[in-house]
Length: 319
Length: 319
Image 1 (cartoon, rainbow over the protein chains, first blue to last red):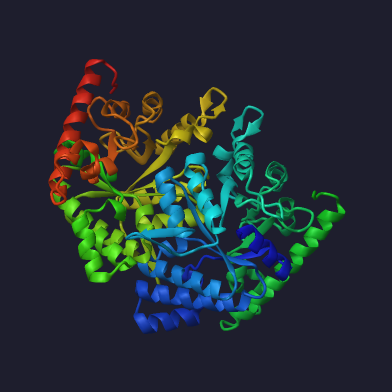
Image 2 (cartoon, each protein chain N blue to C red):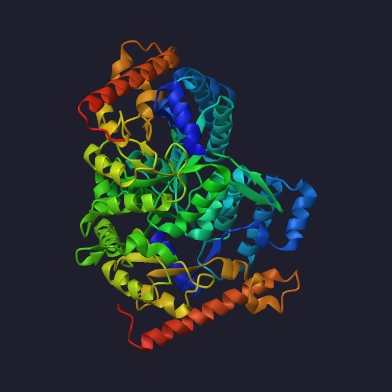
């Protein structure tokens, strides 16, 4: 089961940080760009080559430190078929290194089509009568706007193949409240969605207390995260918005249970492109980006550990 | 502008039906499957070959009858990189035949990522300093759950390159009300989203009265469609749910304006796999699937024209 594997990995690494692999060409190290363009010109093929190479280096440097990677599909689709090919290769490479892979695709559609997405990314494709795994991700983010019809096929696949989903509940962006904070009686829309996540989790709880139906709650909304943690006690929470989007380590903690499980924090730009940030700019020499990524991962792990201890002392976390 | 091109095409074809290309292998004609497996075995490559061939045949037989095609991304992602390659080829082929292409991807994410999706599917990819078109679709479906941050980049791309989006407002599936029908004060969530679509359209109206910000409203909810038509007077409405999902021709009409513009009706399975339906089963001989698709397109066009006239007579449609 995904939640089982994730819990084990988090405990082993003593780290709940997931590395978001969002490979924008503009942010990649000059040396990789130079090599890619030298081999293939300024083409989509060169983009795919650069992404593949960078991702593999990042995976090598982080695979003994983070439980999972989270590729954001948009940044692969941006580079067309070559980008998508790099996504496939990246996922295979990460899995080979023992990492879990959470696909960030925010897929959503009516039932029959949600089934196709679910088969494509988590389950098996029926290929002329034989079911075969496609990308075989460990988990996928999904959007709840269509209700249970559009979620059920994903849950069925999770149960069948031991996978997980993360349902968007309260997203990290500034305008997330425009729909998610609307008041529906006593609750907001996002609280209602959190309640649905809890309802969809019923009967699917593993021995660690988690269901395959997880949720996304942004670090940028720590007060709301306290509520959603209570509304969805059996769900893993994927916490975006830490770092580049302004969420602090302390802001991430309300999504955890007291034992340190129940949440993973995503760090994309701030970790994987740490060498482009102000914090490391005086040290970056154009070559040492991998050392900086490693250093930043160590720093984040420590920062989150400290924030967690502080919150525990303040008595803010629950079982 | 997309809405301009769409309006012209609908008037030229005298037909608002969009052909949904959702190529599930199980539904493809035996002869194509046989050929594909003969050439490439039971592989993803064979799946891509079969999809490409079938889609091209369908496009040939419908390109002088329908204004646009709507490939559903899920059914291409289902067949991995080979499926996605078939999507790229299908789009290019359709555009070569003068068809508009509406990508059904229901993409959604925070601003910077929505920008990547928008660049990928509608706009241009920055490739080592040069902006180049990727798939260059005419329009894309998007999900509004993240609010304007996640929509703005798409709108900007629409304005820059003359493209369109269709925002999910009221989806055709049974459980769409689970979130979309929640009461927010006097309005429901879907009515609120419809109002946002109208707000996002301000200042972007073309000479036919339409903005690039369209909406999705299912044929399965005709009463709700009356309301959304009024709330979003300047938006094209993409109407799914006709045929296989149970929506009748009459159910589709409330999304139109009185002049016959303002909406397109999607028909996927019921049109493109018409030879698999009861209506045509006695005539289908395993070979004549293209004739049946053509016949069904003619039948649908007539059925919708009649339903439209009836509604006009009943005084149900507005300017």
